[in-house]
Image (cartoon, rainbow, N blue to C red; front, side, top):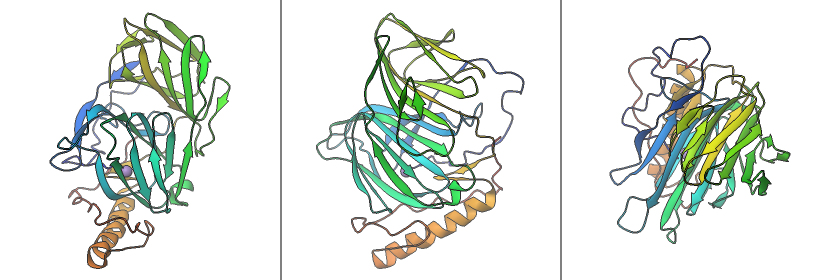
Length: 330
Ligand code: MN
């Protein structure tokens, strides 16, 4: 997906919540339109002023279910670039066609993860299929460490098996958990899993206390570490938590567990780019605008972000940069 907030400066800086030891807290979403005037709304919980990262997870959008029948806002995101991150697409309903500058054309389906590695530069488009009437899912980004962030672009698809653990249904789509290992390649230790828990249940699972962990609620309401959260809210667990204790309410719950080792490097996020400093972003924007101009002049383009698929009629131009220098997020 593409960041299309009116003010795309995500690195607003400013005070976080003080320093010191953080307890478990709920991060509330804000509604953000994706794309143009008929845009679909998504609920964004990362990044925000209180918190920039959970492990290397740097961007969490939850959306739907949205009616995308003709005449309704649709998921239609033309070609746009990324640097310095991996996109993780996880759907609960609907089917989305993904096309990118590795030459990949893939249909993203529920229960199947698509992991796109930007490296130094990639571009992709996403359109819900004409047969899709509802879309519902999560669009997630992972920041890449040095080396990988200037490396090759790649696309991986993986269908996790379904684990039945103490009455819960678990799909581990990134990393290793509960004896299952997902195959997609990550560059820092990461965990991504969907967990479904029946109503009125307390479910426990071990966590690596060295990891930062968040629980994004899709369906139902849950209480985690004494903190209650509902749809589209993200519970950030206290540092050092060695066990996930999740209690459901009157309805079954479906959540995503997102964790990983602390990222340990500053990130500058602007539009669809993750860099280390202002100059990384300025260079990526200029390189992408050259491909936008070439696409519009000739109907095709190539460069840092790779060769545009023939199917692309147009691509998204980058917004104007802010007049101030972008600052890293801690
Ligand atoms: Mn995207």
